[in-house]
Length: 486
Image 1: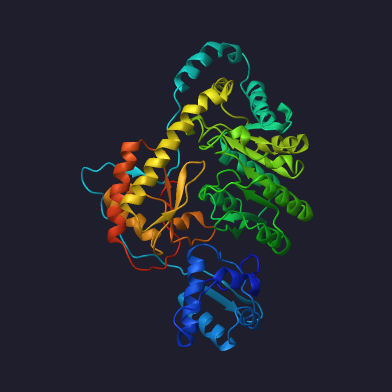
Image 2: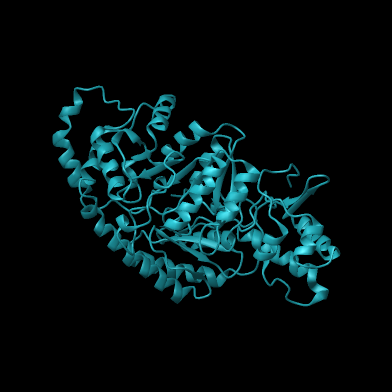
């Protein structure tokens, strides 16, 4: 166990009591065990992220209210499990145990094709080949040039700016930088705004590859737990005050993995919180166009509408059109764009020209290009949910209004065990722990609906067999990081 005090916010006794709710189950004699079990579940669910500093025992005893003896006994039990660490003079904080499940996956069953539930990435949209054919005829006009466009092709930047305009946010092409995907865009933003040891506020849970990008620049993710209905804005405000992050990384439209969407009122409040703290917000809109219940243009205004000078917006073609295009973009103020491009040359000299031309062709009429994509995903979402109700009735989930996956709550903290056993049934899963800044989420699985309906039906049938064979409670260390996630 790491006894160095980790960065992170402090939770008050009052707030901890609210998260615990009705935690006492078996009477006074078992009070400390019940309290330890309730805190343990908050950790496993990711609602108390690793690094969260706990209130002092006296404050906790007053807030619950119980005796300090009970608090001490409960914390002692959690320390023995590796879920709480303490140091004299520094207090106590949430930790996570090291080690693994000790389960060695067998070879997948002979004859079964492996269903990839780890990547929430659909195949290319119809019409992509036609766009390549159209572009081929126009390519000669670029072949006599050097081919380097640090800002991106002007035609594509104009199309992206027009899409922001259609959503009510005035945008000029000079505010757009084309990148090699949203992950590249995030790397550029991190390079601009952070340095080694700096803190970055993230949602808990969050997108695994974004968490990896933050750690890759030696920054430190500071997680703020999502609530059952979305964002904990008071918690974000508290983290801004206590942890002083250099930036925040947020997915406000069909959040990955929970599929929540922050409404206009919430965005206005978030903007006010960011202004008070003077903290830049890096907002990922990768799945914005995948509104399965309505028109993307009718959604909440872009976050930059509320805090133009503090928001850097990331977008990508990967989820809406095809991951193989590897084209993303950044929208920011002209000053930030200039700084981004100035630092970009240390990493690359521009994105691929042909792919930019193809995306510009597709974005000439994005509604026509994406209407079929949204309709198909909505149908596949319904197939997946119907299969889960039939084959995994003990698991619960909310119907996502957009995005690419269902965030499914299991009936016990067994996510990693399910992922390991599922390999024997020909299913590749990303354990819930991959979505936590420091692990956790053993009661959760992200299940994408990007595969054909017949494949989804068979995959969920197999998943039902896995669910029936896995039970019990297991604490795990860091989940297997070798499974590629998208």
